[in-house]
Figure 1 (cartoon, helix red, strand yellow):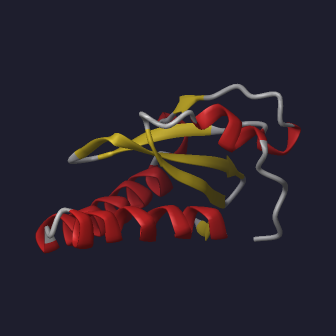
Figure 2 (spheres, rainbow, N blue to C red):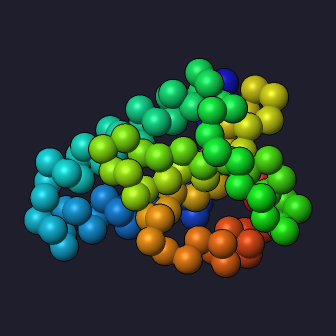
Length: 110
């Protein structure tokens, strides 16, 4: 499976990592978060249809699904599976108003 991580998703992951590292002074939590995102991505590669479907008006996000990051249940990976490709669109905290963030996502060349 080919995995493509959009720029916005990379920024989401970095933002959350830095939050644990700097704001919470929790080096172990920051490292666990990165490991958990990697593990969740690997799991999605094996079973990409297991995430919950998310319906949006944005046509470029047709087929969007979400999956929680283990150990960080409020964090969710938003992704699209197509053929042999898994596209990580965003990695967002569930307490954020995610619909507007996702609706404004444009198609991106991965």
